[in-house]
Amino acid sequence: MSAYILEAKGIVKTFPGVRALNGVDLKVKKGEVHALVGENGAGKSTLMLTLGGVHKPDEGEIFIEGEKVSFESAHDANKKGISIVYQELSLVPNLSVAENIFANRQPVKFLNLIDWKRLYEQTKEMLSLFDIDYIDPSALVKDLSIANQQVVEILKAMSFNPKVLILDEPTSSLTEVEKKQLFKNIRILKSKGISFIYISHHLHEIFEIADTVTVLRDGEYICEAEVKDIDEDFLVSKMVGRKISNIYGERDKDTKPGDVLLEVKNISRAGAFENVSFSVKRGEIVGLAGLVGAGRTEVGRAIFGAEPVESGEIYLEGEKLNIRNTKQAIENGIGYMSEDRKTQGLYLKFSIKNNLISNRLKDFCINGLISEKQVSRNGEEKIREFNIITPGCEQIVGNLSGGNQQKVLLATWFGIKPKLLIVDEPTRGVDVGAKSEIYVLLRELAKKGVGIIMISSDLPEILGVSDRIIVMKEGKVAGELSKEEANEEKVIAIAAGVQTNQKECV
Ligand SMILES: Nc1ncnc2c1ncn2[C@@H]1O[C@H](COP(=O)(O)OP(=O)(O)OP(=O)(O)O)[C@@H](O)[C@H]1O
Ligand SMILES: [Mg+2]
Image (cartoon, rainbow, N blue to C red):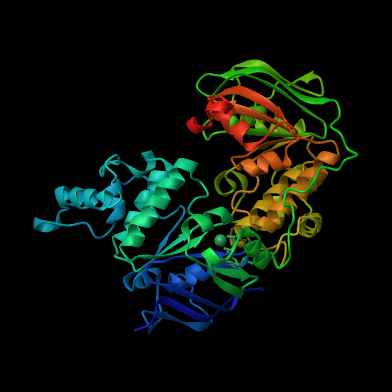
């Protein structure tokens, strides 16, 4: 009997122009959480899709409990004990929780009719695994929060009685509380002997939940370690192959923010935000902090004309704006980089070069026709400037790794040469190396006099990058902190509405 529940040896997987995996090994023990880390494009998702039967490896072997296996499909891998919990996509929004969990395997009775009573009972049983009584088996999945949808997704995977559950960046859309719940659920399943492969760019999570970690870099296996023996610096240096001392970098001492660029005065919209006022100077990075649901995204989208403002005024360079849609915002030099690159930011089926011009087609038109030559030149330039890792600008954006998709989005917005750029969760799903590159790019943009509003739930990022921090709570501005006075405790205290000396309440 093998010591490992799952073992992959020498996995090679190539795509046209990309060697995504180059002889990678992975060994997962029974009942452990095995983290897989690496920079964007290192090959983590490709390895998981190979272990999950979605991709066929070009070379290499996979063993389950010492027995060599090969998978014909994801369903086949499922039957043999490996399930992937997809971040999105796999649930059917208009079907109930129960139907999603037992899709195509619903219990039936006489005449092959679905036995709803039993279906709901079985679902309740599944939910009780996590002590959950607040999800109704008959509720439609589309009406659930993202975290609860993820619970359904995990239970669906669990209904196949897997030996190994793969979680690829499971916390990227979860709040802090929801993350705790997920970790609790992982521990429950772990105690039942289920093994996990856990992918995340939040390295502190690795130290919270994982037992073992494997590091990949550029499709190569780098090392495996017991989490208790290592620290974050070790992981970072293995991931990027160099030491990064301060990922947030430092503001250039000679540059100071200029005069006021944007002034938001008492803007309100019922149910979203109320009497919000603040300003942004030229060359200033203003961090917008707050808990999820504090109204930061709504304010950002309102400034960008993507959502209405019911009262109040917005001034840019001293002139009152009357922006009704995003096209007018772009014409006025305002850009907004969405927090959800997959549904609101990028055209996943289009090439890199076509994404890069999507918000300024006019600039590439000659006599009403798009100049392919200029589009390609712009594509190649941006790939170089933003260090996007890809064989070329013809590549379909959906095929890029998460971090590289994010860089394409950033490059698309830098392209309009904004006066004001709003970036919403700019480094979601982005590795440490690419994160620090994005901060450098944002600082360089600010240095050119562009005002930047950075909305982020990543507190160290807000503290590390912002020149000034505005904290929102329940749709209102709850406080403002200068770079010098700000620290994690103060931001949390304002965001949660408690005094700093009542820290235990936070
Ligand atoms: N279907 C595909 N077609 C072409 N190239 C692909 C495809 N899938 C992945 N790649 C490429 O393979 C490499 C590895 O990608 P992968 O998605 O596995 O990285 P990752 O480690 O999961 O990164 P991230 O942290 O950004 O999610 C990347 O260069 C990516 O562009
Ligand atoms: Mg990935």
